Length: 191
Image (cartoon, rainbow, N blue to C red):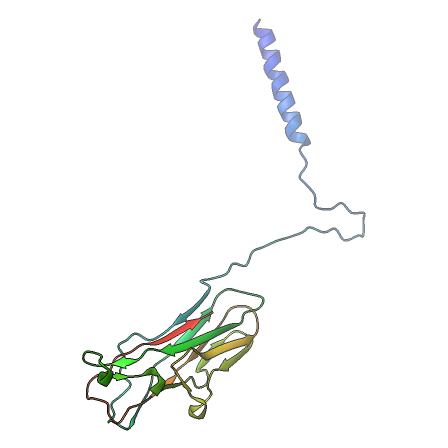
């Protein structure tokens, strides 16, 4: 009886060994001598954090002026970072402002956004390939921030990229403006 049991174990081992010995790795291609034999290879390039815009922390003072004059100052670095690794890596950054108010925000304590101008100036830094276009290259092309305007854009190129600019805002202070520290928001976005 023990002889039968041993024979069964030996047979099972022989079958297992035969199955292992005959296993052949898979082949992508089988080729004759002197013919190229191809293996398809893949890899993945992953995208990063996507498309985002970074603006300076506030509150940020751009200066002091008198009624009937102008106040002008730079906002600091605005950066669009495009980590989408896209075939068509284009984007448009936009800007708009709220009204600026002091005190209780009454009509006499408000400077309308129609009196606030903006110009992006050229890029202070870029990375990646493509065409980066300032919304307003100089003061002569400044725009009023009473509606959404183009601040900067990227019109061609692919892959990851970034652009930084340091825009200037100019406030045309009304002659009837009351004294005070006026607060408003300059809002940038990118898509």
